[in-house]
Length: 248
Image (cartoon, rainbow, N blue to C red; front, side, top):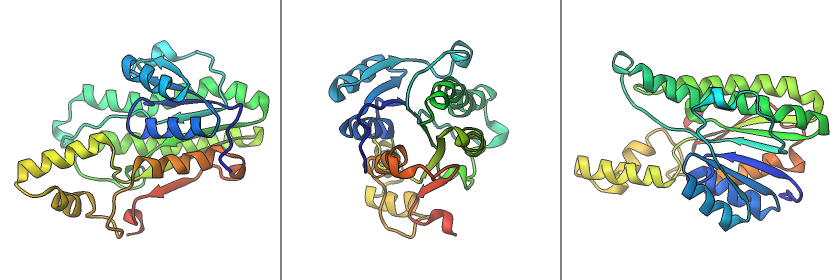
């Protein structure tokens, strides 16, 4: 079910968090994984660990990437950042950075991989969106806009590429226990003088019907399924892993 033998996969932001978990899951399933990350040392370390390849790349420099030719069977657009400000105080440079990295870069990479995928008659594009691709939160306008845009790109790609045997889908996690989120939990506990368990319950699980945060491996398992042979007819869809956040 999860056999990716002889497949080549490109995972952006592959050196940490969700990207690392997905890279590991794909490698365990037999794929050769290109770990793309702005952090050269981390990308090389993960690539060595999983027997893959490292690609040090600044995905925010989309002009340098436009027109490249990438030959892979699977593309996972995962790289992302977060900045939090009210709209009236949101620096334009930060807005542009988020939307370039999290919407424009996936477009450029999708454009780069589609010709070879369509030529072979098989391909998988998996976009790591977010619950914020389906819902909004205050003070996250750039992130929410980028993720909503990524959902639109996912659906359009699905329509254009589907007839050629290439699918495109999105995974929409809520909060996931990545090192970044664990750091945020610790920071908020210290700042507010409460326990980390209280932070998880009141802040991170405030919208969830299930009293548990997802692990990176949970998201990687969905990505592995979408990349496999049993997902031929799953196309243009959003796969939530949010404990019921989007059910309300």
